Image 1 (cartoon, rainbow, N blue to C red):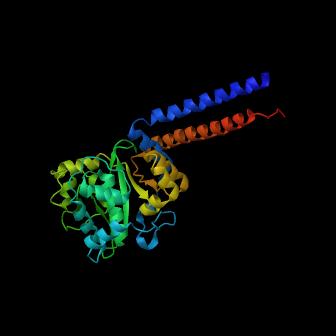
Image 2: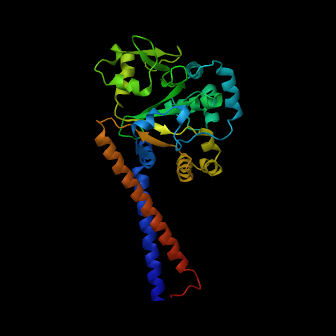
Image 3: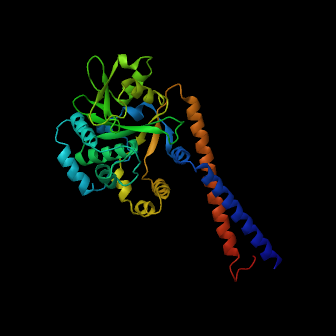
Length: 331
């Protein structure tokens, strides 16, 4: 009897410890931006020049690409919208189409097909919704695309998202901002710029002397003043990162992810990470963001410590409860 009482107390103590750690995690993630920071700390790694220099002819083997069927609504939309032959013009056609969405005031955070439908019926969508739908339409149309993010709060949830499409004629990636409906170009030649070229121009005291902001859709007026738009991007100049995958439909059609998505967005992403279908993020090292990278690594260690502790306590509690089942005897 005494031994059973001890085992009960030990199990109760383990349960309390498990609850305490879970509460600590939930408390840290109470702000959605901090929840993103926790998630991204598990997904992030520091990039090398090769991570950003590849082309569609030599996609890295670890970059997650779509292998699932494109939803019919997006396939039909892509057939209607994307009619050009070159990658750059095809990307502009998608951006022009998304410029017709009625407003941009609330996040959607749904599957790509649902996000596309909601954009053009109910309205709404943040930058990540627009890049998600852009990538979906580009995938449906066979346009090589990849997504970039930039953070304003040390790789947390406050930031922005843009895309690059690959133009075969120029042999390079070119940046498009679907949410703000613009692309950066060289002021002298009018040639569109890549994300990294645009970022390099942002380092100048007067970026607009060498860079032209080319508006795509006249209906989008989020930043009517070029200087304000440039300052917006300069806030995240040391926090650019590349999403390591464009496997939207493979992600959404994974059966376990699909089930988890009915529970919550957090559950969906957690299962996707465990299943290996959630793209990672590759942080661009700039030479001036070492402190930010160190902070991100520290956050990763904290997050892993939380997860390992939760796992160990959960296993220990299960073992302790099994030992309390009727018929169990001490060895």
